[in-house]
Image 1 (cartoon, rainbow, N blue to C red):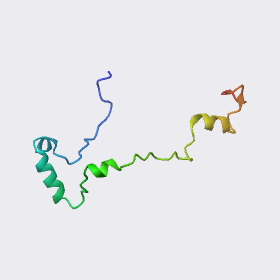
Image 2: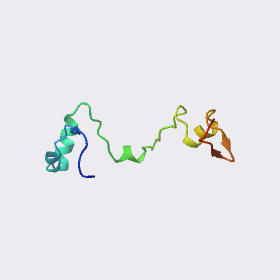
Image 3: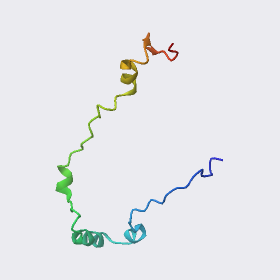
Image 4: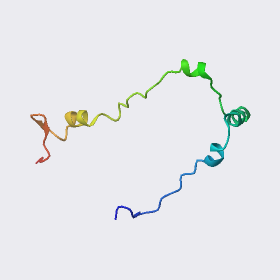
Length: 86
């Protein structure tokens, strides 16, 4: 049952010919990058000064614990949410 699909799946086509890319040499790949107006070639100096930037948390999507704690619909008793509200 787990192996059967219950619906249609769409093909994920990135437009990349992976077999062709695997068959290219590094020099061929660099030449193709140089011909692509949208590509920005990088070198070792670029990556030495690169910084990892993580996204900031979205305040519109609070953590579940914070949401339960501040929710006016679900009162807290001893830190546990009460699900039986009358």
